[in-house]
Image (cartoon, rainbow, N blue to C red; front, top):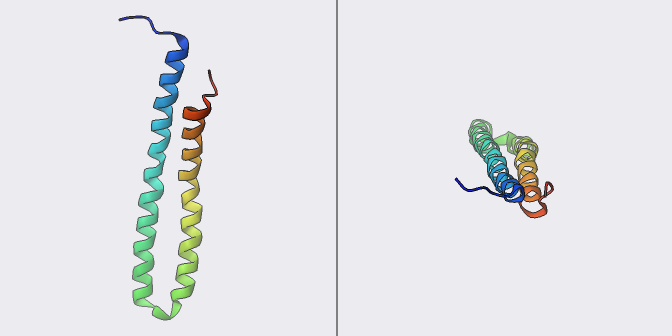
Length: 85
């Protein structure tokens, strides 16, 4: 196997790390889908509480989405800014 430069190795590992970081987007997607399903069930059971249910759903979705946004920021830093080179 040929020798690669340390810079090429770091760039490759940065790209791999960015891909792994983006796997963190799977969790918020599953969690938000589950929460939305439960909210629809709750509205079906108690239509008069629709506004309260939607308010709690949107607050929870915003909190859950922060994990995916953090992962995206890390991936962008690793790919675009290349901090280790």
